[in-house]
Length: 275
Length: 256
Ligand SMILES: Nc1ncnc2c1ncn2[C@@H]1O[C@H](COP(=O)(O)OP(=O)(O)O)[C@@H](O)[C@H]1O
Ligand SMILES: [Mg+2]
Image 1 (cartoon, each protein chain N blue to C red):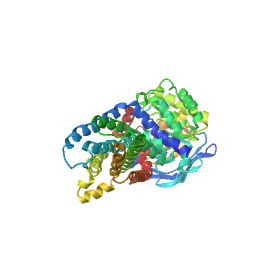
Image 2: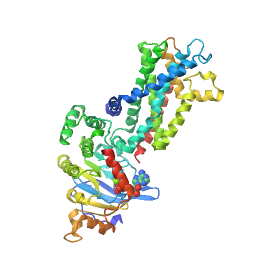
Image 3: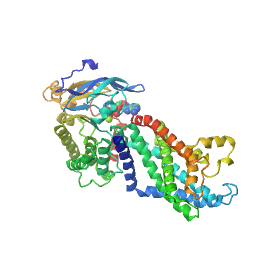
Image 4: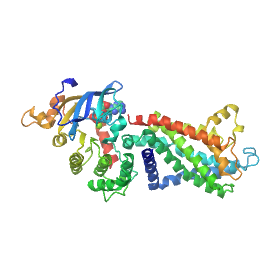
């Protein structure tokens, strides 16, 4: 199946290349033989409903979860054999809350700067720049548990990019945010690419978001990548007025706003923890 | 090496900063050892034969209670590790390039430092109750090291348990079950000689015994350790390293 997936060639040398990446949980295959390439400086979207396997794929690519099968190179290094080298070159904003609520924004950044071995002389300057860029100067000494969801997301993006990674992974970065917060996150993602030349891998289940943000998207359903292409090309297949939602329905035979009570409860809980 | 230390200290520093933001947590933990000394200690001091003839029972007890209070704090460390996993904060650590052992050792070090506040409380309380404490700098330094080692050891043990049981509910149950035997099958509140033979064997395999033994040697005026300070330190350091080595292998799998 994955071998027949149509894939438009990436623009430059790939920073991510996966070959049949698979992850099983017991009898469930959460990601089924995912093969994809992401080019330098590309914004690559992983799109699919809750439970499609987006987070599982990202966790494998960030070395947080060992694949059951398949292999991948990330930022030029083998995912399994050279995990530490991979980690040095990537940034990861997980779906769950990853900033520490018991620390201030400044302290969270200081922790990241030290873990990523940002040279001591540059530390304060880089933290200051990051706080300024993310509009968090005023709240730098406030505990993060008092931040709004949007502020926490911005802090997490800053924490994940202090070391100028070659690839940034963002797992549902706009989930639970209001329209203004979502828009701000989009601008920051575009800015990261422009400023760092970094590739961005972003998951979302909002089609409009994928459409305006991503150079290419992979549609994921039940662990399988059904298609990888540019948003424009995907829509073109279905005629002049098609939206990505239509594409998604066509590809998977389902509407994109599927999702169970459990998914809703989980999303709400995540949103509350961010508050 | 410098890089390793930077990362290790980054983890420990973050933990200690959290403590500074919430000093009440420390304060609340000071209550238990004071109650043990005040209530249990004063009553049991009337029982003959509990402590060696030459040592008043409260003097015998104070090092035991210090080790115990540090143990009680450390043994529940695993809960906060599970909590960090559930929230997602754990990812922030594990996705960083820091060697996994630096992360584990950094957490252990912070537990060691955290236990020192307990030491302060027990020293003050013991002094007020008339325990003859040694305040020689080298004795105090040795006591600090013993307590830090013990807390690192037990908190890392707790982290290993957390990696195995994985949920807070299960951990709470197990944490209670573990504390009892570690505490009572040791020399903390009575000499090993009073125990039945089989329990003596358990007590000799229990790292807490060596922590308490070392503390009896350095906390008290004319204090003496039964096994010798060298052996006490060696046992604690070895077991702590072993725990860190095991946890280093298990900790990264918590994100799975
Ligand atoms: N640790 C796990 N253990 C068992 N099943 C899991 C685990 N993580 C994810 N899954 C399952 O794998 C599937 C894909 O999950 P996930 O990657 O989180 O999807 P998405 O991020 O697209 O919503 C889901 O059915 C989910 O329940
Ligand atoms: Mg997800």
